[in-house]
Amino acid sequence: MGDQATPPAPELAEMAISDGHSLKHPFSDRAPVRSIVCRPDGGAGLAGQRVRAGGWVKTGREQGKGSFAFLEVNDGSCPANLQVIVDAGVADLSTLVQTGTCVLVEGLLKVPPEGTKQKIELRVDKVLHVGPTDPASYPIPKTKLSLEFLRDHIHLRARTNTISAVARIRNALAFATHSFFQEHGFLYVHTPIITTSDCEGAGEMFQATTLISEAEKLEKELILNPPPTEADLEAAKLTVGEKGNIVSQLKAAKATKEEISASVADLKIAKENLSRVEERAKLKPGIPKKDGKIDYGQDFFSRQAFLTVSGQLQVETYACAVSSVYTFGPTFRAEHSHTSRHLAEFWMVEPEIAFADLQDDMNCAEAYVKYMCQWLLNKCFDDMELMAKLYDKGCIDRLRMVSSTPFERISYTEAVQLLEEAVRGGKEFEKNVEWGIDLASEHERYLTEDIFRKPVIVYNYPKGIKAFYMRLNDDSKTVAAMDILVPKVNHSHAHFKVCVPFCIHSNWLCHLLQVGELIGGSQREERYEVIKQRIAEMGLPIEPYEWYLDLRRYGTVKHCGFGLGFERMILFATGIDNIRDVIPFPRYPGRADL
Image (cartoon, rainbow, N blue to C red; front, side, top):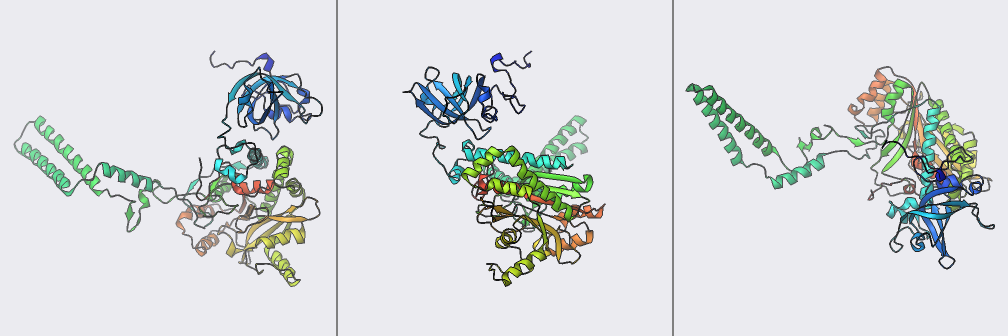
């Protein structure tokens, strides 16, 4: 009987609301604030219902000469607060009104007096829990705080309107990601975080090793128990010799079996002791080396290992077996950058499709971006309204534009020709335009804002600026790669103002929106001899990629894929400037809090 669930009290029984969900949380005896205030009627239709609600006080004030208090309570389920009214006879009001206080209260929902903005309020008759806060030391007061300030209080910043809204937007985009690929028949594959290959060939990888910690442990151990001296070693050898002589003498004297066995046992103990002494004599402080280099044969994985910069190479192994797959997980880059668009730990979405070429790749990427934009409009509009109010007035218009506008497609060569024509017509760029350059932000902005005024996919880039795994085109100069460029619409819809590039390999900064690279992809090189030559051209060692070459040796298939930086998608959607503010626990040079 002890494992059976206790039925809810009759007065707090579940009731259906307009969207078909229960008012009460399924695993907590309370009603989420969202289920009350986010109804089409603002909650007015719930008047007369008895509910239990909990959350953290955003703001509170005593009224009526201390006879009652108004509390604005939020539980993170939505941007809106629930107005709570508590009489002095129910609880100590001075504790309840402090910003940051946690409360769990019970009472009746009532329609407030006319003229107030709230559609419903909770009149409390029971205070079930109070988590008090010291206002003198609480670092998240109700005053306006900068996002930079909040990074110094990472464990509490989710209590703010902005960060909680970003968390819900991030959750919605993650859900949209899985929904999109699952709806289109993709298999979700968990690729390894620890790898022995460098996908991008940049070498900016965090190393995963136990050599340092083992060396520190050994150094401490040798201080407490110093290694044996030469004299100790000689003494151990002498003991073995003596014990061996005794055994020989007993055998020669035809001693009893019991005497010989006992002596042999003593000899065995002496030899084991000598072995331990010899092993400890070899121990030396510091990281083990062999031929003057670090001996990774003694490391945990018996070879060098790193935190992954991409799951693409590994997920290709499944694409070449089960056809359509995607991976969505954390990736790492040890780039010592302090810009607003770089993180040391970030999340990547990387689909891979077998029996598909670059055109299929572009179709999938365009559909995925549109799907996410529409998902936010459908599922997270209240949070997007908050982003529009606080950070970027055009963010909702941008989502609408991208979700509904067909993307233009032009080759890299055509893009350069258009830019060169602009230069001949008097347009000035800071970076010279010539075939072979990695397009700069000013070039990409010009293509999206001035020429096409719509999202643009640029494809077939010079092989010299792209990764080794991208398929070499027949011209032997370009590879089947693509980047997507998306403009930002202005508030009046008259014209596009800021471009946001969707490329994984570009290295530029979109100064106004601060997004930078977001998505990019390619058809993969499926020909064994060609990719082997490309690896050599890039100066990469063959050995770590032998397994990757096997995919081309055994049952090769044309396939393609792309990568989307998840945090950059959130920046694009919200208009927030700094990537450190759209990931729950940002890691960057000098900071790895919690």
